[in-house]
Amino acid sequence: MSSSFIAFKESVKGTVRQPGEEGYNLSKWAPNGTKPSKIIVTPAETEDIVKAIKYARSEGLDIAIRGGGHSTSTASATDDLLIDMRNMTRVRVDEASKIAYIQAGARVHDIEVETMKYGLAAVVGLCSQVSIAGYTLGGGLGYSTGSHGPAVDNLVSATVVLASGDIVKASDSENPDLFWALRGGGSNFGVVAEVGVKLHSQRADAYSISYVYLPAQLPQVVEAINAWRKEQKDHEAILFVMALGPDGNPYVMINGISNSTKEDGEAAYNRFLELGPVRVTNAQIPYVEVSNLSNAFNEIPGNKMIVGAHIDVFDLPQIQQSFDTWNEIVKKAPSSALMYEFYGYKKVANVPIEQTAFAQRHEMMTVLCAFAWTDESFTFKARDELLRLKSVVSGSSSKEAQESLGYLNYADPFSTLNETDEYAKRIFGPNYPRLQEIKKKYDPELVFNKWFAIRPVN
Image 1: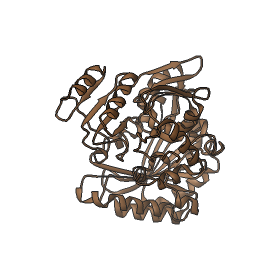
Image 2: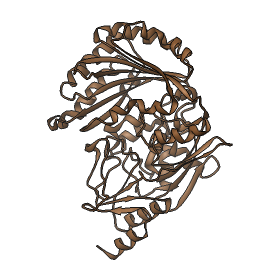
Image 3: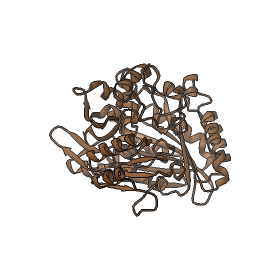
Image 4: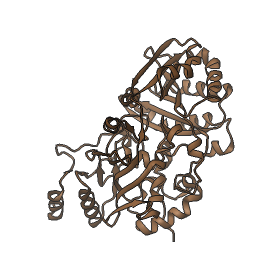
């Protein structure tokens, strides 16, 4: 070991590990999304991030940032120095201002447990294991989108370690250009150590449903979903899912949350019960358990890959074709699923596209195409098959939907194609030129270059 590495390692309050050392941990939800890092730095405080960046740059090492480890791409992986935020998980609630200050590695369920002590909730995702920073900076959709908009619009501040090693605050009043860029621009500008997010008054429980149907019931299910959509309230959201059941047969499901009383939830979702599902689950559950409803998907073994699709047509011919394509693919990747996300999107679309870097300001519906497999022979086909399914899903929608790369946080197959900035231009749309200007100011040497890498303006 060099003297500079020893000095660096001893100076860090967290941990610095190399391959073979106890505590060296590359684990991610998707094993195929990792790389064998030479060094993993797990910060205990923001100063550790400063030291990691300065050391990496002095030694000419590439840098990557890992939050909750829930990405399926290699945007949070590197062969060189990985900054692993998993131990920076503190959540501090300012009850009077209804703001939570949350370290970047804190995960959804832990955040909800802490904020609900005050009867408050942040805008968080569906999955208990997703960490707050990456989710928020990439847009942040979820069950509460209809009521409070995306997470990116609920961000009020960020503490960022820049490529220079400087620690800066970003908000409407401090470094507002950086604050604008972070809201949708992800990890392109530095390591976000902490976010400040708005909190909203939250009832203690919510009404949850999970109804399972036979594929032959697809026409009735699609019709019922479209009828419900015409009456959907902001506090209601459903997920329409295609997946294999425990018996290995294909099923379609409606999973839903109504952030309301049991009576209101039953009134909203009774039409789905009247269809005669083959399995029925409905209950009023503690709000802190909502994000745990998807935990089974967190525990699926093997490789994973996801991509999003956008649609503005949801009718039986389109859904039947998507089901048939998924049902063909699932024979090779049996833990794969297709999930249509019916949130209220008005609060997403009503914000002008130039107000933040997040450019997906429309009411198109988000669809998650998610593959999981253990057969290594499928690994080489996975990306092509995933993009084929994405194309089918949006095939009868508008040209804009068909050409979309999908929801920003689901666009994993495109996020690391950074030989040029073609995909960055597409995902950031008309906001890209301004992002280039801000990149030149805060990271002109392209130190942060893993996820839809923005090129500094010439």
